[in-house]
Length: 214
Image 1 (tube, one colour):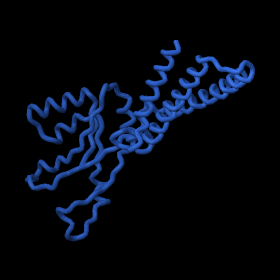
Image 2 (cartoon, one colour):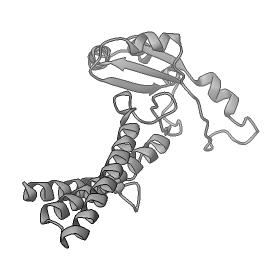
Image 3 (tube, helix red, strand yellow):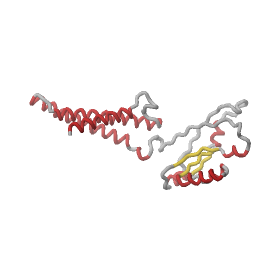
Image 4 (cartoon, one colour):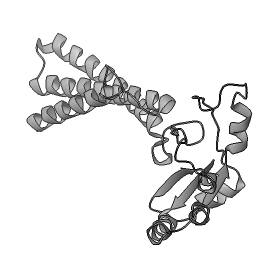
């Protein structure tokens, strides 16, 4: 069992050979990166008698070794991954049990891609800035109310916009924090508490308040 990584150019060559008719091993030679996980799988399979043909599972990690580090520097708009067992072409595998697998792609130990790796910190800083600004604004509004007995409508609208913006950023920060851990985050299809959706709603409400204020 092998994991093969294809750049967009290598993927085009893979499909060209597939259309013309080729062997599995010939197509995998077009890969930008290949790594066998069969040996790891063999170590994790229970070899007890009576397990043949039954369901079993194993886990294998494809690390970023030196070869992959060189591949990662190549230009590519997209990367494609294929999990293949070319030995199935060597014998009649029509009665072979189905192979199901799940793959997790990580940026180091995080599920966040490299272009989003700094977003949780940015959101946290924005939350602190908004909290500090809200404290200063509240102190100024309270002093104004004590002096003249009222607060201007613009100040109230700005306070509402600040609260909505803080809620939006906080919800998105929670979504990103969970996404970093499990690669799913807090979305409708993965959680009963879709903070990603709430973040968009609060952001839209904040923009509406700001447009009304202007």
